[in-house]
Image 1 (cartoon, rainbow, N blue to C red):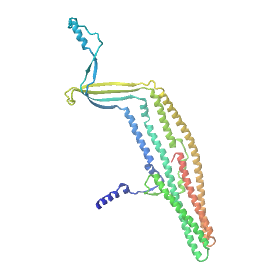
Image 2 (image 1 turned 90 degrees about the vertical axis):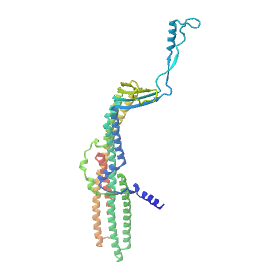
Image 3 (image 1 turned 120 degrees about the vertical axis):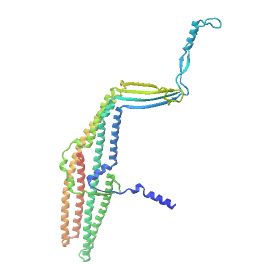
Image 4 (image 1 turned 180 degrees about the vertical axis):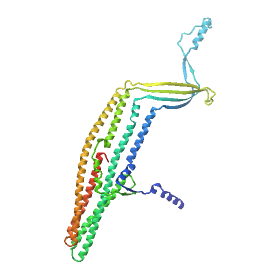
Length: 466
């Protein structure tokens, strides 16, 4: 039993789901977006939809090629079918007797009976029958199929455009998640620096208190500020952990994998590439590209319905051999097999269908008009998005510049206040107040930095250049 238990434990230990190695990723924002595009399930499924469409296109092409099939059939009749044939024998016999002047038992000449025609059963055929043959069919003209052949590339383009629309959405989510983590990490770094400064201040104050130069109230005020900063830093740490988990989910990687963000956070990220963001064309938006392809496909569908009034033409050829046997001797090839072959054309002409084709054509026309209306409305929506995104982005840049200057000014005030305090010319209250002002200025700066990055992402997406 011990040996069996050891084997079971070994099997469980080396299960594939346990042996999967953790991975480490060091990614820039662009690399993170590329990784997400490779891993995200929605993109994978859309790419599979593209392969499905390509396979469908080949299926349509296959319908235009010759269709060849073979068949074989064997039958055994336990009772050969009966056919009723008119009684042509009795009249002939009576006619011979009449012609020969034969008389009946009473000496009178025999005459033909005047009764109605009678029938007698007859069996034709043999009990064993086998047929083997090959059939060929070639479609020569079918309107809807040839329109489908024309729509092949557009159908693939539709799946490609759908993928691009989804890619824009995924990129936007990844960039926002990526930079939100960077902002949180940067903010926590400065909070920890502030905590170090307050710890240093508290240590100095404890010495001053022992020597009787300050009151214990000054120590309590410093401790309150230190407690607040420590709590805020812990909260930011939790947010960073959640941010990494969210980013890993957006990248479709394992939560146990290690993720390192190699981009640095600075104002240059926001201002980079601003000169290339000026020109705009509706065709740059992936949604417009997708709707234009839908419009083309609906145009082909309208054409298909209009051509449905044309006839369908196909040709066919069939060749077979039949074996008729009184016993099971089909493999005796010395006996004869009877050939049958036929060639023909099949022309199907629509005449009247109760208005079905007409109403399908009208539906296709209305669907095309709806798509045109949707495109026009989307262009108005894009105009609004561009205006709003442009205004928000400009305001975010302006706010970021102001907050950057505020941080510089708060640092200057803090440094001066600290020197005054160290020289005994200032109070601990003033130092703590400037410390809080500096922490607040830094917090506002990083929030405005993230707002500016987010606004740039929105503006770039609105331009169709994400």
